[in-house]
Image (cartoon, rainbow, N blue to C red; front, side, top):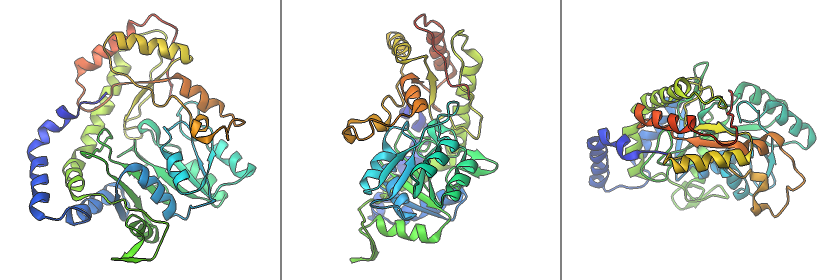
Amino acid sequence: MNDLVTLHAPLAGALTAAVRRVLDSGWFILGREVAAFEEAFAAYCGVPHAVGVGNGTDAIELALAGVGAGRGSRVALAANAGGYGTTAVLALGAEPVYVDVDEATATMDPACLDRAGRDGGFDAVLVTHLYGRLADMAALRAVADRHGAAVVEDCAQAHGATRAGRRAGAWGDAAAFSFYPTKNLGALGDAGAVVTADAGVAGRVRRLRQYGWDRKYHQADGPARNSRMDELQAAVLGVKLPHLDDWNARRARVAARYAATVRHPALTLPHVAAGEHVAHLYVLRAADRAARDALAAHLRAAGVPHDVHYPVPDHRQPVHGGRFDALTLPVTERLCAQVLSVPCHPALGDDDVDRVTAALDAFRGAEVTTCTA
């Protein structure tokens, strides 16, 4: 599904120099490299503040804590995004309030969010930009404002996505990014960041990422954790950040080639609007679980990489012990039974795309369809 060796090959000299620079400095945690990347990434996102943390899930947790969510808070979120948001909400001791998604975009439905606000209310909203597509932030923000709730964006799959000149990460009260190696902007290990326009939120996140300290060995805030971006990952991300827009453009061209070449009569391909959708994943939809499984078996036999993002909705995960058994999210549940991802990354060549296309066109199993937006 990804080829990081090919992606990194043209940057080998710069990456080696960055790692050598960190080794020669003798400083490996929260030093100059982290500060430089924080400044550069905040500027890229169009906000004043970025705070480097250990990984993307910590970033969600710390962003939520930074805007005031904590034990007993009710956090509205979608249930089709892999469970990372739920993990963060539960780690805070907060209560997940699952909201159904829009059929066309697979992102949180503003009307469903409004209904959740009327039914039981929520204190914060976690909006995931799924598969690289910006959610309808203007509408979701308006709903959250009506209900007096803070908004946190989960931008783990949407680095660089833009609408009306505003990037992912600049819409909410805070935003969380993952730099897991396969993300549109990936480190060489785990790393994450919280970005925000609010100096108070940034200050709290900085304290909470390091034991709650306001100065060394002086714990002024909490509950806190140890979640610090290291200097090596910051140096690597600093090398890669200037290439992000070009990589996103290549992802969009891969998506466009699929759209231009796939001819299977039962396939309707996703619309990837360059800019608003940075094609982190290219996700097909089948008619149902049986059709999806048949397509997956066909691709496996053809040697074509594929995956399911994501097969089990959060409210059906066994960790809840049946707590949400009575909750029905019809669109979420349908999508989780239908989705299947095929390769879409910057190192994918046109011939690779054509090989995937040929395999899709050769499928003769149950009828499949895909997201039309």
